[in-house]
Image (cartoon, rainbow, N blue to C red; front, side, top):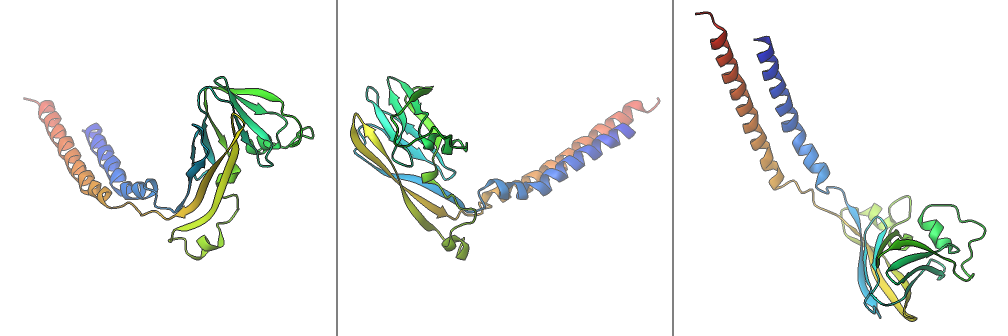
Length: 217
């Protein structure tokens, strides 16, 4: 009987924890905090390239098949090279080390002829690009004044060449307040409440059956 009561207690505690914690979990996971949005607005002279940006600095780039693409670094030095289904990184580009949060070695030189090392296979490559996200320790002044309002922070640009023809990826970094998202999710509260009652009922019936079975004839 003690084991049965212990089981009932476990069910009650587990369901109560789920019931009480659901709203908080939903609030945390629904994007209740304002956030950064970085997006590609247009690509000038795209030549078949594709690109995507995110608010945390991840930049996804896809080169067209059969073409040689060079992506410029922060000092307009050759940073990445897409050719023959492979991606190469210029080991002398200071940008390569900055993007990996590594110290820039003395040999790195934006004006030096590139020295290419294979970095990946395929035509799509993702790297951390500081041009496309906010680098400040604190939010911009406009966001600090009114964090609940949308703000355009700055336009960004990533350039390079496709078969020696210049291209430019133009993007925008914005502060986009998001809604709490606690609308339909609150319907889970009565559902969890019903689950609590059902758990108690099942445990009670099981306890009664065990008691009846154990009773001497």
